[in-house]
Image (cartoon, rainbow over all chains, first blue to last red; front, side, top):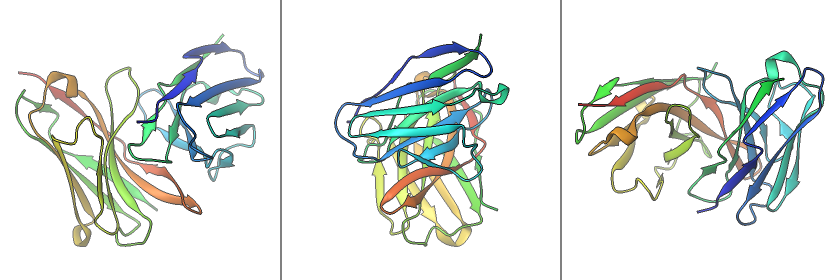
Length: 107
Length: 123
């Protein structure tokens, strides 16, 4: 199985901050990497697919990059509604695997 | 509008069989490239993919649960059913039904999620 490791596990930041979350795969997944946002009590929502393409309706302050084994999710200027948990997920090979999540909290 | 909704018991006893039904609308599971699957999330924990069934009847399972889980589809009813045998308290989680869509070329993502259903395994 491909292991997905996110860092940090949790992060405190302020509105307006630039934030970067990292996701590392245990082997190359090319660019088959997706990001999801989950708010408390809600289902996850697809944020970015294929490493860098924003899902429809996602604000442009979100961006993704990377390839192979190392990927990043960046939020350029945090907004109050961005405080949530973020998960990466590889769709390159079965079994599909997720990172453990990064909880983004208000400082 | 594409929606998926999970239904099933909220409490199951250990060793019993859990059956969850996903009823979806707004798309067809006979469309090429589309799949419907199940993902679970224990309270406060990460997401775990369980199973997928594709438009062409191909079934895929998480190796850790393969012997306990079965996924089936009824295209005419727009339903996908997950069956999990011999449940244990560690199977307590919110279970999500998800659509796997072709998002870019051969790449796929879980683009639509159901609201989830909480299942507690307890005697």
